[in-house]
Length: 463
View 1 (cartoon, one colour):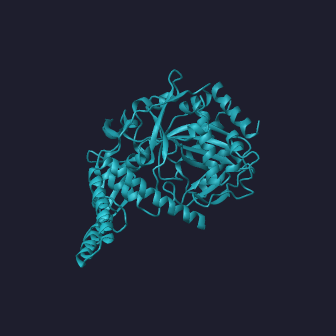
View 2: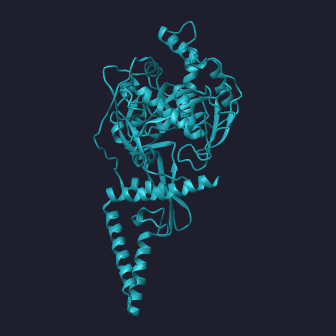
């Protein structure tokens, strides 16, 4: 790790702790009391040192310093003591779960069904048999096709404030995540998708988005897939609380079996900030392999096939608030590619060579909305410079399969499977979408599907 990245991580650690302080001050009355006590004690301590005249002033200063030490805790963070990762000598940790606990049932997240509205749109898990990642998606070819073929996709911002705190256990979870020096976390401002995927198909209504904070995502989409563990007096690890019980699903019975289905209002119960991933095709006409660092909050030690991250709220202003939401998506995708490859000076070229190809929901992260796309290198020397940022991306390689037409993406997927390359779900879905488009070149394809195929084929050819 370079000295610059180490300094950046120190900055993130300090910034994350400060933002956690502000967050707890807003939402937790215990936190406000503890913080006020600490501030007042600091004031008294400084006065006692400044006005020191007798031995009793020294004794009083020592007592006040002890109060401050207790308030700050061993990690020097002013948060309520029962939220700290180590409380009364007992360590607390979090672990991601693959199952949801609901009404005494434990059901794999991969088996969770879409809402009735999105079920009617054809949402399902199309890659259940593809074992290159542990998480599961819900997607619809019908929605993806409509997303590419719509003449325009208008959008609007909803300014209605929302709260996502249902349990104090969520606050403990967020404290553990932020105070974990391995994965530095700050409270960035993001853009969230509000409502059903039907808005991607229905041309009579604009897409609704809203401002979101990353801590809201931790409180919901990340917390609700997790369990909190603690050590006991026998130095064993035991479950402290199972936050998957808050997963936004309800139970239904079909053909004698019990299933879990996303609640119709699940999008209002979780943050739903928008994820974006663009499949990167290098100047050698090969798909990039970007190996992620161990300190990444999401996707650590995995492989991405291009730029991947979240839509920033600031992207709206930077992109000039385009009328078509797909133009804003392409801007965000290009920004992520530039940031993770360290090629920011080529942004305009990368943005011009990025198209949006589809959408899916990330089941394991409470149905998180993810838009996917494709980026062609054009004149950008990604491979020549072995493009990495040294922070999120630590190694650059290419899939040794030339891509000159949509059908070649099937060979790329086969290579990943044969070599057991552990791929991030969003990258897998971006690649899978290209294999679907490859089938649109068949004689049996509809006129709309053939139109999508020709558009992608021309894009690959640089037309």
